[in-house]
Length: 123
Image 1 (cartoon, rainbow, N blue to C red):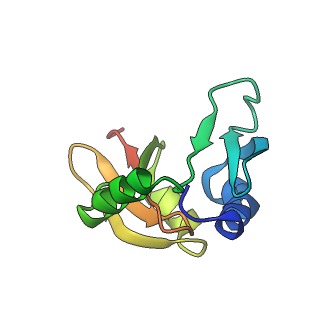
Image 2 (spheres, helix red, strand yellow):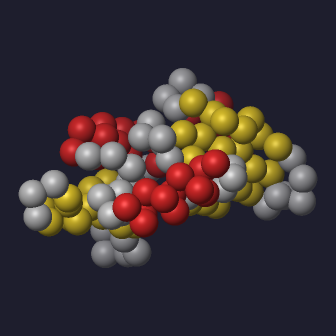
C-alpha cells in the first residue's frame, strides 16, 4: 500500500466501501510501518490481502515502474464490471472506464495512488 500512516488510515476507512474488505491485522512494525491485512467480511479466516508499505527504495521503484507502464498493482474478479463501475465511480477515480473484450476490465485509483483492475468473464 502506497504511502505512510495517513494514506493507510484513509484506505482503511474506505476499504469496506470500495473493495468490500475489512481489517484483520494492523500490527506496528518499527517506527513507521505496519503489518496490515484485510479480508472479505464473510470469510474472516480466509485469504488475507497484505497491504505492503513502500518504505524500501526497491519497493517504490518497482511500484512506480508498474504505474508508469499502466500495470495495475492488483486485479479482482467481479461478476459485472459495469455494475461495479457504476457503484464505485462516486468513490474513486477511474483511469480506465469499462472496456469490453474477451474479458471486460476497468481500472481505478484506490484513493492512495495504486491502480486496481476489476475484471469479469463474459456471462
